[in-house]
Image (cartoon, rainbow, N blue to C red; front, side, top):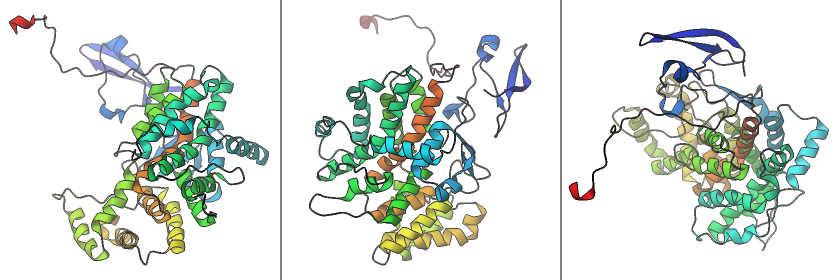
Length: 431
């Protein structure tokens, strides 16, 4: 917890309550209202908790006005350009960049835990053949607590460590199996000689009938997608993981809750929405009409994948993702893909049109990631599962941090009650 730096006095109903003020290492000061009800008899009202710090954390910092995203102090653009996903996983989990020996050991531990329990294959077959991959992932990850009893005791540091490695290692395998099941293809086992991203691509796209070689450009692009989505502070799914685990729930149940929250279209479906918008536009010659609609405040149409709820300037992840998008499109080509041609032209207009520039409606990470995943051959139903694979390390890091917090309390939000006051029960014959 940060040190108290000042205090504020709140006066209401002839009462005065002194509230401590804490200063973080970065970001706005925080007013501590924990004693407000006990001393003042009132709650605060903050729908969506958008002005409430629900915890103190040393993992990720966002400055939306300046377009800053830091993991343990390191800017996301440097990590995406110079590092790779498993090194970022280590950083998020343990707080520092690893030495070469520590990184090798960590990568080995993750790689050797990528296989799932063989009996879980039968669990997959209990879903309908047309089940959405996210529905499958929610069920399978939640069921991990039934297969891995030896890592569910949250009071045991070693079991917490084992559960963390298992979740990060097995999530790509589970996501790829959910994909394969949804398209009627056989499951593909992971290979220990491949890196994290290459292994995932092979498990998704290889078939037993022929060899599959992972293109390094595609592998690097996938690794960057994972890296750029690894953690994003106290978003809805992360807060869900924290709230679920605050009750003492096992890590697999808590992460399954996070996956369920991520499934919501307002959270994890942004890149899918952006791609669907590109398909709605259809052809390059239709872009001017949609640009005109986007500028009309009375038209409900909105350009998806431009601007960001948190980042009021620019999305710091977008620059690196654009580079990967350009590399992937150069490799795979856009000449015969109308959707990708629309994306390239729309990007050009948005970066040059004064309306978008003035309002800072720059293409964001979801715009570029949707383009990349579509070009790779993923259906939109897999966009959010891939997001879940990337975000697992963020959820796990936040969970581990919370579990070891000596001030941990079960989450229990309050409410502004607007229902009936006391009423006596009326027998059914008299109603």
